[in-house]
Image (cartoon, rainbow, N blue to C red):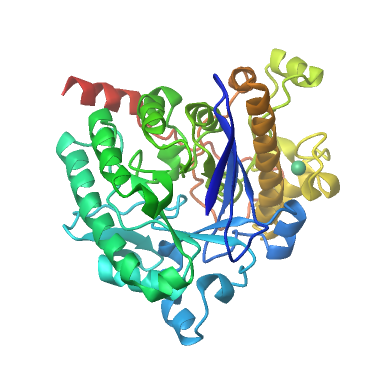
Length: 443
Ligand SMILES: [Zn+2]
């Protein structure tokens, strides 16, 4: 695959185009852009047809081995690729190790194996098993095995280990890839994992090593900033992440695409775009819609007078909690002016009712709205990058009020009668990431 860099701005990041896949020559991703997060090869709660209505452009799909590894035997048996098996062959498939919406299960790291978290629990994968899986699935893009379990606050020794183990694992995967007829015949490309935790020096070392075999990689995946626990990732601040991501992007070759996956807050996404990251994923949308029952309603129209008025009166929040009983009799759409199917056809009251009765249509309607809103947000990001006015959008977003962090309600299965208020759940102990960083710096 080929990445074409079109514009590099002074303070708003860069614009590019990622395309050139021989199998799908018309498929192209405008960057900054989105790759769709999937479970088992499909976007959760959204059928392929609904997704096509949301986005007419051909899609890039992120498929994690956590929720596809159980298909290996079936895919092998019918001699198809994973894309063909899940009827997504008209999209670019990218195989990654972790699902950004999964919660990691703790365990002792092994020297030559990488943990993944499947629906049957924690499993470890070694190079030979992983590369056989890649040969069976034949994705268009994949990331070699790596050790990126270095969240904020982990020890220096752990970060050092992650770089050393990643070098060994990537080297072994590369050797297998070069010899494999199945992979070279199918034109499968590799994405290099950039690890090194929160150490600038180790990141430099990791990039230096990867650049020795630069021509083997179609792009770079910035890893090792978290362990993918979505509740923690969404609380990572730009002050924490930028001092690492900015020098990483500067050290990476300009003509290669840079990816960064995880359910980051939209304000952090904007900072990452400014730093030079090109591709993100939609796990944030899924996290909000399906796990937290929240609609994304943050405003990204910097010139809309009504948005300014709403902000001034502190009424405009970035999300709408559909579980809140205040919406029980509100027949307005989730977001006024939104052109998505959910907002055109349904009301806050109906989506709230669907939550109360635990109807499966609830997360479906929320996914449709949230995906639409997030894709429009990325269109606006590209517009602001082209004008070099991303800081303006960042400021506009930072002025909006956020809801308190989501707390899972205890009794999820029992339906709550309409109009009855649920007991206020206890405050979730907030994990202070800044404190962790300060502690790490002191040590
Ligand atoms: Zn909508």
